[in-house]
Amino acid sequence: MIVTGRRAARGRPLTKAQKEANRLVRRERAATEHGFADLKNWRVLTKLRMNARHATALLRALLVLTNAEISR
Image 1 (cartoon, rainbow, N blue to C red):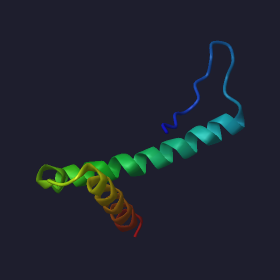
Image 2 (image 1 turned 60 degrees about the vertical axis):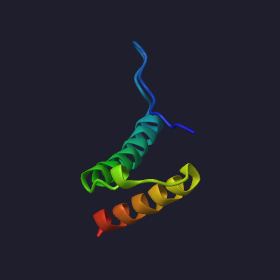
Image 3 (image 1 turned 135 degrees about the vertical axis):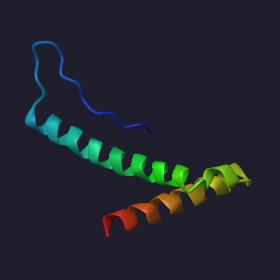
């Protein structure tokens, strides 16, 4: 599932709740994008030769570890 932020329509600004929701989406997306950038810099993805199901689990684990390292 893809979660996207809300956009203001012409003449109709976002409510405070929608702005807060956008802030949370941005925050989560930034953490994920930084994780993928780290994986690319480490060149982990170029050496990946395995079943797609196992690769997905590996990528999720690597992103969790990367986010844990960033938050320290």
